[in-house]
Length: 208
Length: 208
View 1 (cartoon, each protein chain N blue to C red):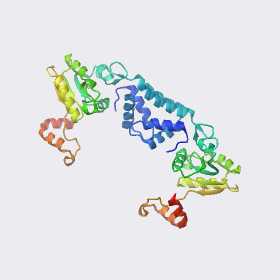
View 2 (cartoon, each protein chain N blue to C red):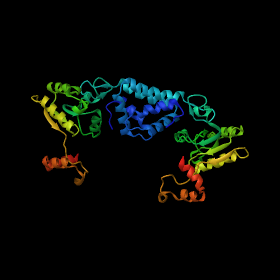
View 3 (tube, rainbow over the protein chains, first blue to last red):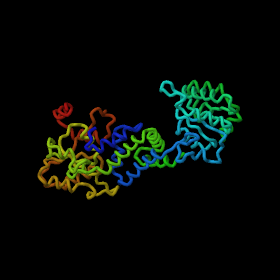
View 4 (cartoon, rainbow over the protein chains, first blue to last red):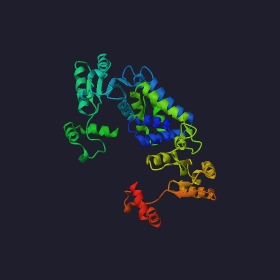
């Protein structure tokens, strides 16, 4: 594509760096911004810059936060004896959107992946051990993605927490509600039979 | 979706204002920017702000430009007696990308559309008439989208240019190269038979 203006070309190049945005979409976004008032565009850029500069990570759970301690950790109504271990901030947002969980979180920042050069020291595992060692945590719920790396990370953390007075659980794995059996992959289906649950607890889950 | 941070929420809201970007995509973009260095994010926001503030419109053809006169109008190698009338800047970029056109442009900024409250005075039609009246323009090529509004605009402009020594042409309409006859819409197919072209000019077009 030939652009009649260097300014446009540079702006398109910047938008193109974002994930999932190609040249044509980038141009569409730039031409959209071009039609807006200067003040709207300034608001757009200032909000993003402010977000990047002022964002902080919660000292306790490493979630994103506006304060030193995030709004979830600071909420006295939440059960601080329950800690849900997740990979990323996105997982926190996904679980929070269900409105079903009332405990705290611990954001690891990734999973152990030798292929990508991520070792245990690159993750927030040590601070999780410290939180558990403080005696305030009763249960740790592992909510990592069901990949080899996720399972490895769960295994590593469970070894590290061995001996501490915390119960380690994992989110339930199985066939999704609404999922059709014939399209479910073999591993999920096989494990859903092995780890079958009492009918009563099934009813409770459906009633939620 | 519940966001753990007001900063994130505001940034997501700003991205959501862009066309074709929903809440989930906006969050993905925000979390991507969060992972970048502050300097990269600053470069992103500064480039966009600079683009919006410093962009100018060519005095001659109303195309976007870094200067008072755009690079196309200022290029002495281009045929200034040929003017291609288009709706938007995007059309200029599309035609320029073909590398087949060597004349100048005239960006109307839209088409006449009573439904959307766009009248002839909202478009850059008067300056087109002036360009043509100056005697420097030999041919005006109408390259508007083949809609009712586009056809109305072409009709209006041709009336306005009546009496001036300029030839008015339109880009060829017909079945696309690579298009299959059975999937072409009725109007295009019917008009492609009525406005059939000599075989020689077909060969020339294919040879380009």
